[in-house]
Length: 134
Image (tube, rainbow, N blue to C red; front, side, top):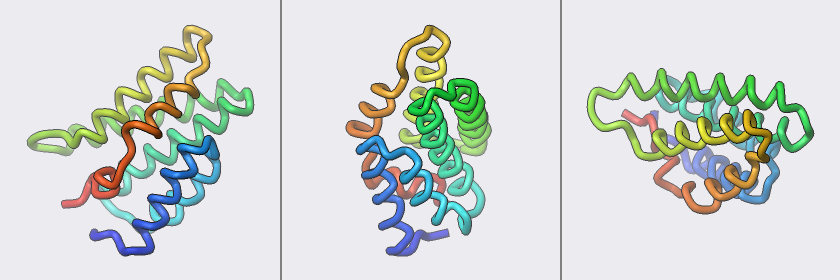
C-alpha cells in the first residue's frame, strides 16, 4: 500500500519526536499511520512503535516493560526479515541490530537510551518510510 502525503508527514513527525526523546509522541504519530497499514509495512512500523514504547518505559524506570516490548519488536523484525526472498532492507537490519544492542545494554545494567538517540539521529531518514512496500 502506498503511503499518502499525510502518512509520510506523520511518520516524519514521529522520527522528529524520537530524535527529541519524546518516545510516547513518536509512538502516537506512528500509530496513526500503522492502524491502516497491511503486510510488511504494518509489521515494520509496529516494531518501530514498540521501539518507541520500550524507550518510553525505560525513560520512566520500567525496565520490565521495556525489555518485554523490545523482545516483541525484535521477534517482529526477525519474522519480517524472513518474508524477504532477496535482500532484507537496510533499515530493518539496522532496527534489528539496535533492538538487540539495547536489550544487551539493559541486561548489563547500562542505559540504552543513548543508543536509541544515536540511532534516531544517524540512521533514520526518508528511506525508512518505504520499508515493507511491495
